[in-house]
Length: 194
Image 1 (tube, one colour):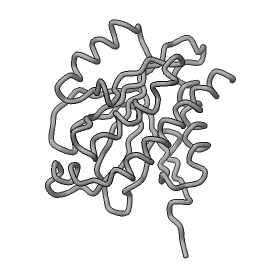
Image 2 (cartoon, one colour; image 1 turned 120 degrees about the vertical axis):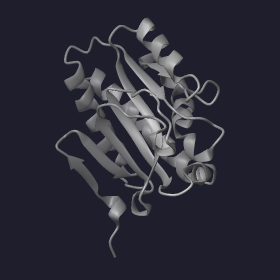
Image 3 (cartoon, one colour; image 1 turned 90 degrees about the vertical axis):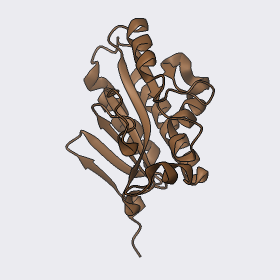
Image 4 (cartoon, helix red, strand yellow; image 1 turned 135 degrees about the horizontal axis):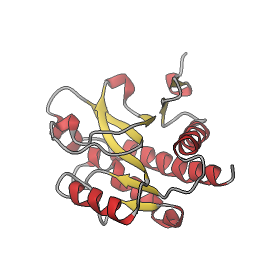
């Protein structure tokens, strides 16, 4: 019997993919995040802004706000934008990004968002270098966000994406959010101790 979730895939040190049930997920994601942070800011002087994108009005799209909710108690180590109480979503993302760049000169932005994908990839968490384009899965044109990103594949794409996001299992989203949040806290802590 094979367990595909027990493996991770690393692509040229620019992206790591890992299933949320992988027992090594926290170590894999936090180590990679630490490397990304060191490479982005060798001196360790830049502020970190964590931007959790999504809305609590659709189960599949609440991954970001749930990550923000988990991270609220650790926000002394970074600047947090996007929680269940104050989500960053399509209607306010331009204002939030302006606010972030006014408040923090040249921050390292870690962006988190839900996405849709192939059936066999549901439950995968992607951590990579670069920007994400929020809303692309539901055909919205929003500004790209991030220097480092986490995306979580919460459901299957291809047909009636709005309905799919509305009918995504909260259990999967909640577990993925917890793993992402914990890996962010661990990765930032590892960065500080390097």
